[in-house]
Length: 203
Image 1 (cartoon, rainbow, N blue to C red):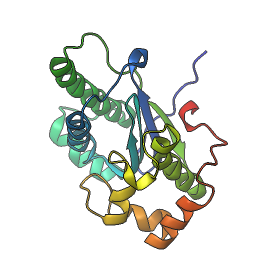
Image 2: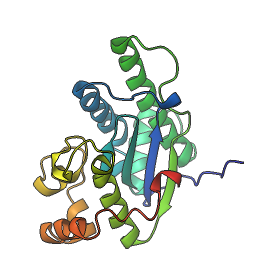
Image 3: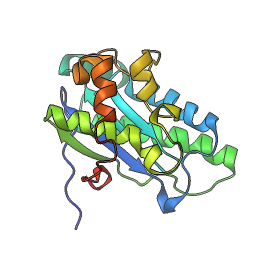
């Protein structure tokens, strides 16, 4: 029996994640990763601030804060004939992201069939410590999977973007809201980095 997913509503933090259908790769080349982030920015950049992310070969995670209601009204009123429930409108944005990416991927990789699982999973987050642990979990996933030896070596997560402030995906406020400064960010990631007592993928 599936658990009912919480609605995605204005002003709240969420852990959003999805994976491929049938354990196939979502990303086969560096171009795939870059194209997905471009489309993510296009479909989600106006309705959510992104605080952390990681793109893995077969799945992805995003830690986001949905923008306030006033900003959502401005955005959706320009792009829709009428305003429906926010959860429906935001979910449709995610669906558009997946569909756009899938069409491009399938064409270039000569792939047929569904690429993503049909429904993106989400968890509403209210605990600041949970936010920090989730961000660390995302950044260490490539290390745990044996893709790299150090978090800063992985090119498809927000770790370096948070440190360097050189990403158009990550919210400028993310580092300081979650960790206060760079020193705290680095120290937190170096403290019990392999403490994966909670499986965030099962949320």
